[in-house]
Length: 125
Image 1 (cartoon, rainbow, N blue to C red):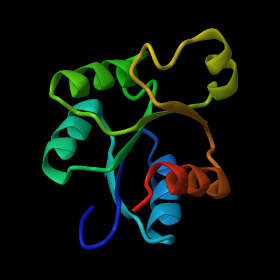
Image 2 (image 1 turned 180 degrees about the vertical axis):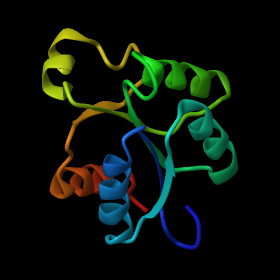
Image 3 (image 1 turned 30 degrees about the vertical axis):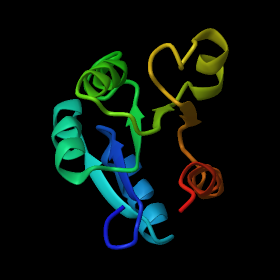
Image 4 (image 1 turned 135 degrees about the horizontal axis):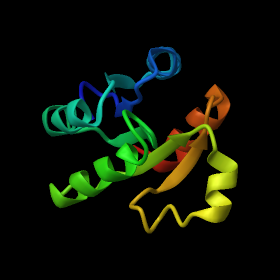
């Protein structure tokens, strides 16, 4: 938390997705931090100390999101990490996202109501 606001790190190579997450988060009292690559996301994780991370599964290439989570866990990261995916619901049926290190899955495009409800549950002050 910074300046009384929860910090949410969003990592996606689609600028439109990042823009929509920024609008939702900042418009509802969260501090948004965005990254377009896994490498940038790891750097920002270290400098910004987010309270929750939302990461695309296929950032730059297939499974970059899963590799990001592995790197984050190796670096001692222990915040909730949500997978953002365009295959969301079908992925949760065929994949054990917890084994990959994710807390849960969000379907693209994520609705503001879904996102804000999730944040309200996970980030109780």
